[in-house]
Length: 182
Image (cartoon, rainbow, N blue to C red; front, top):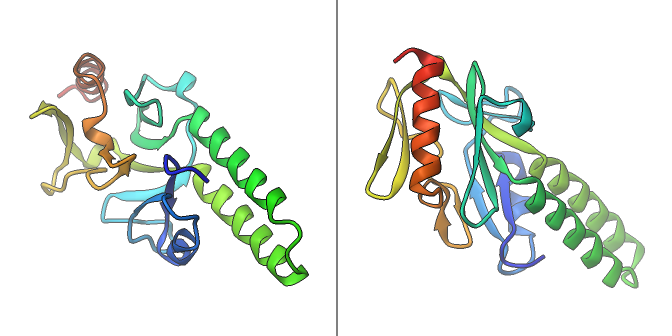
Protein backbone atom coordinates (compact mmCIF):
# COMPACT_ATOMS: atom_id res chain seq x y z
CA UNK A 1 0.00 0.00 0.00
CA UNK A 2 1.18 3.51 -0.67
CA UNK A 3 1.87 5.97 2.13
CA UNK A 4 -1.36 7.85 1.57
CA UNK A 5 -3.54 5.11 3.01
CA UNK A 6 -5.31 5.84 6.29
CA UNK A 7 -6.19 2.99 8.61
CA UNK A 8 -8.93 3.66 11.13
CA UNK A 9 -8.08 0.99 13.67
CA UNK A 10 -9.97 -0.08 16.77
CA UNK A 11 -7.87 -1.37 19.71
CA UNK A 12 -8.09 -5.07 18.90
CA UNK A 13 -7.14 -4.30 15.34
CA UNK A 14 -4.19 -2.07 16.19
CA UNK A 15 -1.87 -5.03 15.71
CA UNK A 16 -3.17 -5.34 12.15
CA UNK A 17 -2.39 -1.69 11.53
CA UNK A 18 1.14 -2.39 12.70
CA UNK A 19 1.34 -5.13 10.07
CA UNK A 20 0.48 -2.62 7.34
CA UNK A 21 3.20 -1.95 4.78
CA UNK A 22 5.85 0.58 5.68
CA UNK A 23 4.66 4.11 5.10
CA UNK A 24 0.98 3.41 5.76
CA UNK A 25 -0.42 5.92 8.25
CA UNK A 26 -2.62 4.85 11.11
CA UNK A 27 -5.06 6.91 13.12
CA UNK A 28 -6.28 4.96 16.07
CA UNK A 29 -8.82 5.44 18.78
CA UNK A 30 -9.07 3.28 21.86
CA UNK A 31 -12.24 1.39 20.96
CA UNK A 32 -14.04 -1.30 22.94
CA UNK A 33 -14.39 -4.16 20.46
CA UNK A 34 -17.73 -5.29 21.88
CA UNK A 35 -19.55 -1.97 22.16
CA UNK A 36 -17.73 -0.12 19.37
CA UNK A 37 -17.24 2.90 21.68
CA UNK A 38 -13.99 4.78 21.17
CA UNK A 39 -14.26 7.59 23.73
CA UNK A 40 -17.11 8.77 25.89
CA UNK A 41 -18.82 10.16 22.81
CA UNK A 42 -17.19 8.65 19.71
CA UNK A 43 -17.99 5.21 18.41
CA UNK A 44 -16.84 3.03 15.55
CA UNK A 45 -19.77 2.60 13.15
CA UNK A 46 -20.76 1.86 9.57
CA UNK A 47 -20.07 4.25 6.71
CA UNK A 48 -22.49 7.03 5.88
CA UNK A 49 -23.60 7.90 2.37
CA UNK A 50 -22.61 11.55 1.85
CA UNK A 51 -25.56 11.92 -0.54
CA UNK A 52 -27.95 11.28 2.37
CA UNK A 53 -26.27 13.82 4.69
CA UNK A 54 -27.36 17.36 5.52
CA UNK A 55 -23.84 18.27 4.44
CA UNK A 56 -20.66 16.34 3.73
CA UNK A 57 -17.35 18.07 3.15
CA UNK A 58 -14.21 16.50 1.73
CA UNK A 59 -10.68 17.34 2.77
CA UNK A 60 -8.58 19.31 0.30
CA UNK A 61 -6.50 16.17 -0.25
CA UNK A 62 -9.69 14.27 -1.13
CA UNK A 63 -8.83 11.54 1.40
CA UNK A 64 -11.42 12.11 4.15
CA UNK A 65 -15.01 13.21 4.54
CA UNK A 66 -16.83 14.89 7.42
CA UNK A 67 -20.53 14.03 7.40
CA UNK A 68 -23.39 15.77 9.23
CA UNK A 69 -26.80 14.10 9.45
CA UNK A 70 -29.84 15.09 11.49
CA UNK A 71 -28.54 13.09 14.45
CA UNK A 72 -24.75 12.72 14.19
CA UNK A 73 -21.41 13.89 12.87
CA UNK A 74 -18.94 11.38 11.44
CA UNK A 75 -15.54 11.16 9.77
CA UNK A 76 -14.63 8.49 7.25
CA UNK A 77 -12.41 7.81 4.30
CA UNK A 78 -13.64 9.21 1.01
CA UNK A 79 -15.02 6.68 -1.46
CA UNK A 80 -12.00 7.31 -3.68
CA UNK A 81 -9.54 6.58 -0.87
CA UNK A 82 -11.45 3.47 0.19
CA UNK A 83 -11.38 2.12 -3.37
CA UNK A 84 -7.67 2.95 -3.75
CA UNK A 85 -6.81 1.21 -0.48
CA UNK A 86 -8.72 -1.93 -1.46
CA UNK A 87 -7.10 -1.97 -4.90
CA UNK A 88 -3.62 -1.55 -3.41
CA UNK A 89 -4.24 -4.37 -0.91
CA UNK A 90 -5.41 -6.69 -3.73
CA UNK A 91 -2.37 -5.78 -5.86
CA UNK A 92 -0.01 -6.39 -2.93
CA UNK A 93 -1.64 -9.76 -2.30
CA UNK A 94 -1.34 -10.75 -5.98
CA UNK A 95 2.35 -9.79 -6.07
CA UNK A 96 3.04 -11.98 -3.06
CA UNK A 97 0.92 -15.00 -4.01
CA UNK A 98 4.04 -17.17 -4.46
CA UNK A 99 4.50 -17.24 -0.67
CA UNK A 100 3.71 -20.40 1.25
CA UNK A 101 0.14 -21.41 2.09
CA UNK A 102 0.28 -20.17 5.70
CA UNK A 103 1.57 -16.75 4.61
CA UNK A 104 -1.25 -16.52 2.04
CA UNK A 105 -3.89 -17.41 4.65
CA UNK A 106 -2.54 -14.82 7.09
CA UNK A 107 -2.31 -12.16 4.36
CA UNK A 108 -5.84 -12.90 3.17
CA UNK A 109 -7.18 -12.61 6.71
CA UNK A 110 -5.35 -9.34 7.36
CA UNK A 111 -6.54 -7.86 4.04
CA UNK A 112 -10.13 -8.89 4.79
CA UNK A 113 -10.13 -7.45 8.32
CA UNK A 114 -8.33 -4.22 7.38
CA UNK A 115 -10.67 -3.73 4.41
CA UNK A 116 -13.64 -4.13 6.74
CA UNK A 117 -12.18 -1.64 9.24
CA UNK A 118 -11.58 0.91 6.49
CA UNK A 119 -15.23 0.58 5.45
CA UNK A 120 -16.40 2.29 8.66
CA UNK A 121 -16.59 5.71 10.25
CA UNK A 122 -16.03 7.34 13.61
CA UNK A 123 -19.23 9.06 14.71
CA UNK A 124 -20.64 11.15 17.52
CA UNK A 125 -24.28 11.89 18.32
CA UNK A 126 -25.09 15.60 17.92
CA UNK A 127 -26.49 15.79 21.45
CA UNK A 128 -22.88 15.49 22.68
CA UNK A 129 -21.52 18.27 20.42
CA UNK A 130 -21.61 21.73 21.97
CA UNK A 131 -19.99 23.74 19.19
CA UNK A 132 -18.25 23.71 15.85
CA UNK A 133 -15.93 26.56 14.90
CA UNK A 134 -13.15 27.55 12.53
CA UNK A 135 -10.06 28.39 14.58
CA UNK A 136 -6.44 28.84 13.53
CA UNK A 137 -7.01 27.24 10.13
CA UNK A 138 -8.80 24.15 11.40
CA UNK A 139 -12.30 22.93 12.04
CA UNK A 140 -12.84 22.36 15.77
CA UNK A 141 -15.74 20.23 17.03
CA UNK A 142 -16.11 20.37 20.80
CA UNK A 143 -18.23 18.14 23.03
CA UNK A 144 -20.21 19.35 26.02
CA UNK A 145 -17.37 17.92 28.15
CA UNK A 146 -14.78 20.08 26.35
CA UNK A 147 -13.33 17.16 24.35
CA UNK A 148 -12.17 17.92 20.80
CA UNK A 149 -13.71 15.45 18.39
CA UNK A 150 -11.67 13.71 15.69
CA UNK A 151 -8.60 15.74 16.66
CA UNK A 152 -6.00 12.98 16.27
CA UNK A 153 -6.71 11.78 12.74
CA UNK A 154 -3.79 12.35 10.35
CA UNK A 155 -3.63 11.61 6.65
CA UNK A 156 -0.43 12.10 4.71
CA UNK A 157 1.07 13.78 7.77
CA UNK A 158 -1.75 16.34 7.76
CA UNK A 159 -4.31 16.60 10.52
CA UNK A 160 -7.68 15.87 8.96
CA UNK A 161 -9.40 18.75 10.76
CA UNK A 162 -6.82 21.15 9.26
CA UNK A 163 -7.34 19.78 5.76
CA UNK A 164 -10.78 21.28 5.09
CA UNK A 165 -11.03 24.52 3.15
CA UNK A 166 -12.25 27.48 5.18
CA UNK A 167 -15.19 27.88 2.80
CA UNK A 168 -16.32 24.26 3.26
CA UNK A 169 -15.74 24.44 7.01
CA UNK A 170 -17.88 27.56 7.35
CA UNK A 171 -20.67 25.90 5.32
CA UNK A 172 -20.45 22.91 7.66
CA UNK A 173 -20.64 25.21 10.70
CA UNK A 174 -23.75 26.97 9.33
CA UNK A 175 -25.44 23.62 8.68
CA UNK A 176 -24.50 22.37 12.16
CA UNK A 177 -26.21 25.43 13.70
CA UNK A 178 -29.30 24.88 11.54
CA UNK A 179 -29.43 21.19 12.50
CA UNK A 180 -29.04 21.80 16.23
CA UNK A 181 -30.80 25.15 16.60
CA UNK A 182 -27.73 26.47 18.45
